[in-house]
Image 1: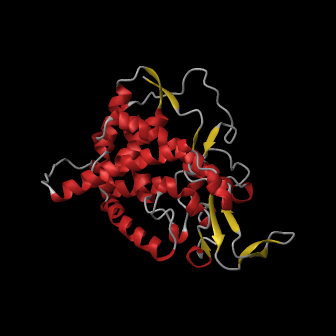
Image 2: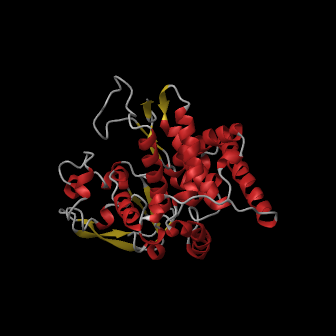
Image 3: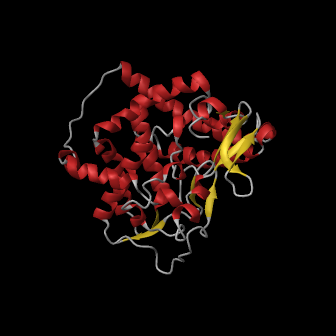
Length: 337
């Protein structure tokens, strides 16, 4: 299904459900419009292919500074959200989020969470998404658009105004390609994305009567007819925890499962960034920024720990918040020493 997404499947009612939140772009488009938008976005993300993580350093330094000034218990989750927002705006617009007021950022963050939740509810209503369009949802979407619009305006101003170049030292990793290549291999095999895929659920609708190669019959191996207009759910959150694919310890955090040939033919059973024609353009960028950040946090705070007495529950039983994205409902609380 994923490999034939451009031909047999389209977004269906998801476009209308998500449009007030996301607007016109690759997440709400099909066909030629989607292809055009994807090509426009591909160019900024090609920068990551130059294997230079220096662009992450300013947001990393800002986050490390906040951690250094913290006293005891701190929730990493909102700091990671801020970090991701900073690196993404810097990549696409040429300016990190730090160039905006803290009040604007806080308003954006709360509006983003709220709009994500309402958009999820609208998507579940399928053909009746239009029924649920509360005023607070429209206000949140307006805040998001205004925030993004500010970066667009400043980016256009910079493009046609004066420019300055800032020289800086390169990371040692860039000077040692062998070590850097090894790091990238380790990044690609991260098990955290298996247990907690950022996009836990996706849906596509058949734009013509088609079929799935298996899933039908008593043994689940027979083809399945999919009539035009029928929606098909793709659920990496469930796929990544199947014992018939990952073994009896599928729920365990065991990074060494990626070593050797155990998962050499995993294919589309592992797709934290989707796959096929709509494979996430930011895949390499996201993996690289996360790794650079984690490495430097552990270097600066080697004694980072869970709070004393913090309950440790089995994987899958912790409280999670499912909107368009997946995140912990209780945050990521740690103690910095």
